[in-house]
Amino acid sequence: MNLNKTDKLVEQMNENCDKKKYEILDDDNDVVLLGQDTFTVGRFKQLVSLKFGESFNKYYVVTESYHRPISSLMSDLQINEGTIIPGGDINWNSRKEGIDCQVLKIGSKGWEKGKVQIEVNKNISSKKIQTSIKFCPDEPLEPKSPLDDIRKSEEYKKLSNNN
Image (cartoon, rainbow, N blue to C red; front, side, top):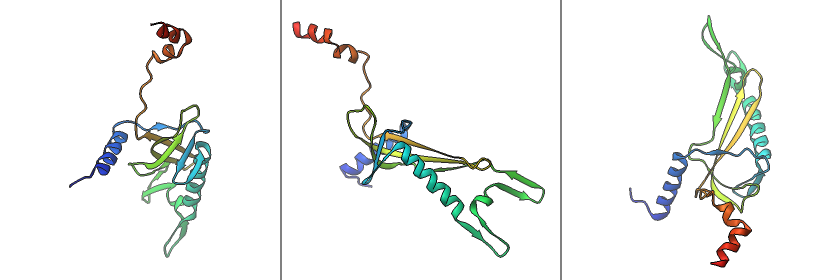
């Protein structure tokens, strides 16, 4: 297969995200830009959880003998008449390659382009839904040097100006 430069770059960025772990966006005040829509991380998690819960309880399985929501079918797994295994959690993940986005973290210098992955976990018995948003930047940030703080200090600037 013949890849052009753009395809190779996209492939390389996807490999970078596959090789390193996505970081969880745990500051609810960070901002995510998906297409033309922006959300705080906290609000985005709320909306994903809400839509997941609605979808999970909305769809029905209809047969000749019953009409039940999918959620009730997932509460246990009946192997045979005598063996019923109670359900625990149901997990849903967005696609592995991630979703194109930009993230603006509180205290950062600007928007970072990258990919997000979404994970939703629904506990069958408690009916609680937990959502996490993970981010992988297209270009990894340069690691901070322990000397950066020293270089920013006034004393260092004075010393470097004297030379």
